[in-house]
Amino acid sequence: MRVTINNLTFGYDYRTVLKDVSFKINTGDFLAIVGNNGSGKSTLVKCILGINKIPAKRIFLDDVDITEYKNFRNIGYVPQKFDDFNYEFPITVNEILQVSRYTKVSEDSKLEILDKIGILHLQHENINNLSGGQLQRVFIVRALMNKPKLLILDEPTVGVDRENVISFYKTINELHSEGITIILITHNIKESNANFTHILSIVNGESMFKELEEAGEMV
Amino acid sequence: MILAANESFIFALFQYSFLRYALITGLIMGFITPLIGSFVVIRRLSFIADTLSHFSLAGLSIGLYLINIIGFTLITDPLYLAMIFSIIGAMFIEILRGYYQNYKEISMPIVMSLGTALSALFISLAGGFNSSIYNYLFGSILTVGNRYLWVIIITATLLLFLLVFYYKEMVIISFDEAYAKLLGINIGRFQFVSTFVLALVVSLSIATVGVLLVASLMIIPVAAAMKVGKSFKNTIGIAILFSEISIIGGLWLSYELRIASGATIVLINIFILLLVGLFKRFFLNKRLKKQQPELEI
Image (spheres, chains in turn red, yellow):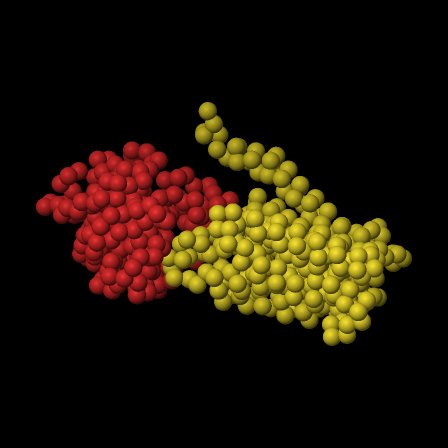
């Protein structure tokens, strides 16, 4: 999916969070959005997801203005925290995936995705019995359920141990090599060994966009 | 309502149609209340049932006042006014939840207070407490007969229709509203429809267990099932089973021991919750420890 942002300025009430952000990435690109806590990274993602309402002609998804864009199912999103999800009530991994599936995905390809992300053995498990790292993988599988053209991951490795971080980026690199456009938000680009093609760094709402000459060169 | 028991419950079931109707009504309510109650619990709205039942009581009292004092003939049964009030109360809650975005639970005490105040006002205007008010407060499943059976069947059908055709949407909205929004689901429309059905179920539960005990019928079997359920569907199935046991057991015990039916049903539910808690604490946890001795340090 092509994502184009033209001079986007966005704020809540009187506080400006994003100032004049612009960038363009093409299908198959891998963008890292880097910045400190509170720099506006998640706000930018919420704009791309259509959650934050913005004026016309600022964001284009596959050349369609986001204010007219309808098919957000093309975007797979893994949120930073899973606070929005109501835990405790028993539900299995399979049941979550079943209700999250709105594109025709065969049972086999569902199992294939579960296997690729490394949680095939957990499919009948109640999510309340899973560890943080396992749960995160469930949400990645959920994001992949509708065959997304764009995958957005918000700080995916916060609170995950070193070993799991390495295997997580290995999985993400594999997904990228299959042609999915990926936007990954992180405040610690050094820990990631991902094949980024572009980097957008945000400092106090001001942004700098850079295309890397060689994938993953800065890392 | 308390009945004098001369024959055994089973024998009486064959003999008295009112008892058969009470059982059928109870079994249908026992099926649909935990079904919708599960979604209420997941959305952390457990207090909505209590709020709506108190608002329904306002409808009941206004109905009693209109029928008994004013001589209103358009509505013959105050329960129908309770149903309308339950729906109005539900709409009030949704409006207030939108108004206090960060303090959504504020909507409940506001609507509940309004309902209770209106009830107190119209009960006094209608001539104070009498047996019919008592029946609405604490339930009178044995006296409802087949009066509300068709309304209950229609509501149950509506709920089943909603769940069969919109299962995915209902589940994803309840568990993860933000993600449902991203999937392009019209959350407002689903909330409206599900709150509407919930309001109907709450007002109809008044006939079985009464205003003060409605929430227990909707929430307690789910609370017990949550502790032992392995999956979403399994948990709802267990909740329905617990609820039906309480209805059958409650009717039987209240008949045999000549005690209030609504209260007996709720107390059985509490007893099941207690048993499940003990079972989990002493049996399930012990078995888990035995299965994983290598994890112990």
